[in-house]
Image (tube, rainbow over all chains, first blue to last red):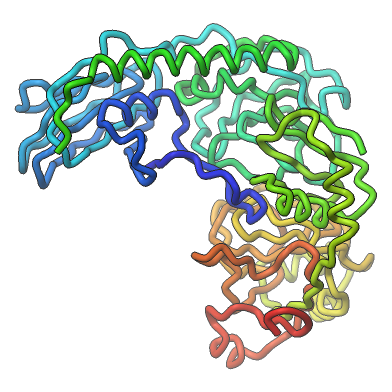
Length: 262
Length: 213
């Protein structure tokens, strides 16, 4: 289960956590009219299949990486919301592109609605990075990274990069979601939303914030090139992607006006 | 002091003229929601890039920071005690005694909730590498050393440090967000019997000097 990120606890060693793909989560909240509910929770499925049974009447929404949905309920599809009846069930079967899908239930009656389009969290040509704290401590050629089988919400481990081997011994430093840590044998680990608040490996690059939701959808074996951009460019990209998301959400809210709130 | 970008909205402060944990505490008093201290650096999260660091320093220098001494009961029988002692050319008993012989300031809390970085270890027990194969499951309460550092795993987690003992105390972050060991605290390890261990199981460690004593 994931909730909105909760900052302010890093000094206790507690990362803000929250959904890996914040954009899909935000769409889910909006679909279920839960944007103001502070404790709204969703299931974060990572390439997993589940069967869910609903004890009461309400509405379910599914957003994120493509999945197939099996149910007796007539409107049950993904990237949509649909009413569920007491005792009904929905089977969600993992797809083959993207990785994380978000599912939530709200005990309110809302009409079935499908998203006319889904923002492009899944499509990924390159991960944009900015120089990290140890960028100048070595040479870190921008080579494509291949996702290893070892990945979870703490971090995504990649296949070792020969040219990134190092012998740097550094005091541990505060770390951030998206930092690329490199172990001595050149294995890059991109820290995830549950990643450590302090880390001792060098961090030559940091994934720019606008691309963080895309990390949620990297699959084992997938190779992605890195593209370095300057800090100022990353700031602008972050503002622009935030504005695009705000626009998408406000259009969705307009499309959903007339919902009767239970 | 100088800064580097951690990302587009967070900065890493270096060359801080006072203890980083005091600087981080002062930053939180000034309203920075996330300020994390480590050995030599402080991370300030979600702040403007031109945040006034001198103001934080002034607050820190004008503040009184409570100093506490925390006592940790310990049994030295960890799964790596014998092999670690061998690597150090010591008997297991000598390693255990040396570990108790020094008081350790807490430099930082991080890695996992409530995980306190303590040190430096005395020279005789310093310099052990991390295990080549990190354990996937280290039980809570495990007392560990590596390099010049020592720590106690507050919750079950993976870990690569050498496990030399165990404490009965609960060092996890409480529901009201209290740390058992805070940055700036002085930590003393005291060997205890199995009976003492059992009667202190799940208790918070005793504060022997300072607030909460």
